[in-house]
Image (cartoon, rainbow, N blue to C red; front, side):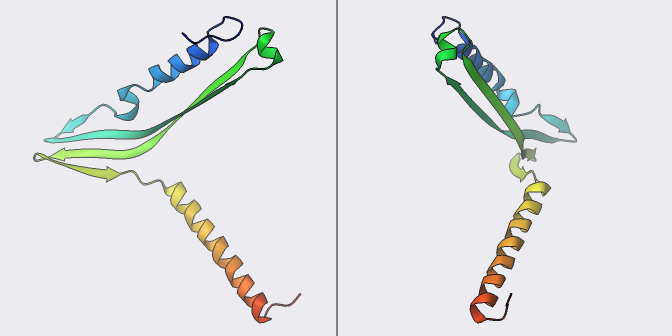
Length: 121
């Protein structure tokens, strides 16, 4: 059993909450069946946790925390006895990636122009 220095099982409770949250239903959604096709949605599950042992913790005020994140990953589509994977498209990530590429390209062009002496201040 995991306990803090004060005997309160706060960290153990946090870990237990993560384990309960990380059920199969969190990663694999409820299958949907229609017209002979079964779709099983999936998600990416991440959990982060931490705690500290400080003077406050020894005084009876320990600190610990857990963060749980999920995002859609895609779906398994089962039709005619064959399973296929259909990834979820995250448009925000695509846009962010394009912005990063554009900034790097602009900075590279600027560096090349300065090196050639074509851009003066």
